Image 1 (cartoon, rainbow, N blue to C red):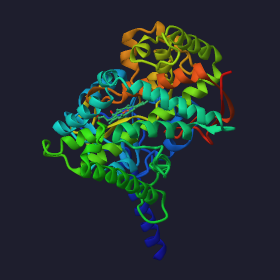
Image 2: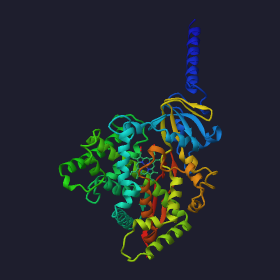
Image 3: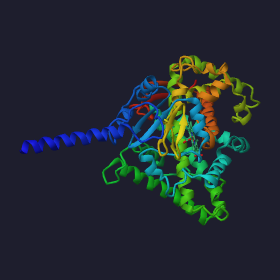
Image 4: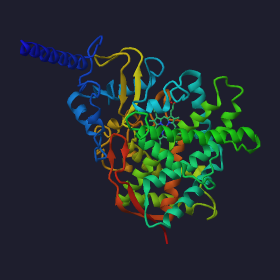
Length: 477
Ligand code: HEM
């Protein structure tokens, strides 16, 4: 009798589990879903995506699935149904659909930290989003960088100082050192942060914060996520204090990003002090990690490719030779005269890609190539898949800046999107390129560098550098 009841319970349990698996793997859809697998209930295929891959190549999770299913496939990550796209036409379509059939999305911890609907408005739409973009572009866009004549010389001077300090040390860990450099300069543009007078290494708090971002969002003391939220609070408080000081003594304002936003507090109804603080925090966060990762990868690739350094050095020494005075600083026109340097920067950005993809959430069903992506799903645009596609870039894993001389502009526009596209295209793209070019200018004309140890590339799936890249810098004789 009991054995029959027991058998019945086990049978029901197996039917229930099979039913759950079936439902999970066959989500509701008013059409045909792209091919793929949804993995296990709840965790989906998250674990496969976060397994570290020690290669500059596309993460195996993406690469093997593109080979198996094609350029569009479905999966499930951190509890969300996801369609991954490496299809250039569909990518462009999605990026143009912002606010129409898709909206911005962050996965997992990112959404908790940046608050998709709280005080953070990095996810803002409509006029608020337009305001944020125009403010950032008026500080970091190409026109403003050109107009503010002292910016390039200030940047050059800061790089000089930084490299001089690096050259006095036996070895430096490049990712940490470049992150500090980018943070200090960008935070000065953002809110007048004076790193030379600051007692605290606030850039370290930012770096720690970033490392905790990929943690499980469990906010109780002792967890990495809790530490991440504490770090966020500390950084917001620092910016809040600067804001208060500026409001209390407006005569100290120097025209940084925060000063400009303060001016709008009365005229723009949606603006609050908390909003401005969060905005400065979000933009600073968006900037320093991406530039420092690109610079770190660049230094690694350059140290492995002496012929690239040789041509870079020739270009920058010509700039120095053509100057009237040996004391004069780098100018905007000299920056614009560079030809090989932009190719090197393009090539670094082609291979870098810090984030695994650009994320959007569908607001309605989307039809693509005979498939339907249901409303409420996440689309992950993997731009790196196109930037490492051998059909677009021959021998994609080879660092070859010269390839940019002959590349077809149509191939570039379809396959190269380091700064995204559409309405949310990165407003810091021009600033990042100027930063990298100025760094390279000082580096190749005044310094030599050699790798001491480390330098492993890890995609997990965010780009990282294992135990770091340690290098020795020395002034050229
Ligand atoms: C190498 C450096 C950089 C890379 C590779 C990069 C990449 C990107 C990408 C791919 C996006 C699009 C994200 C999306 O569509 O969801 C983006 C957006 C953004 N980036 Fe950057 N970025 C860099 C530097 C910067 C800098 C220096 C700043 C600030 C000055 C910045 C601020 C932003 C902001 C605020 C957005 C959101 C724009 C919006 O929603 O309209 N980024 N970035």
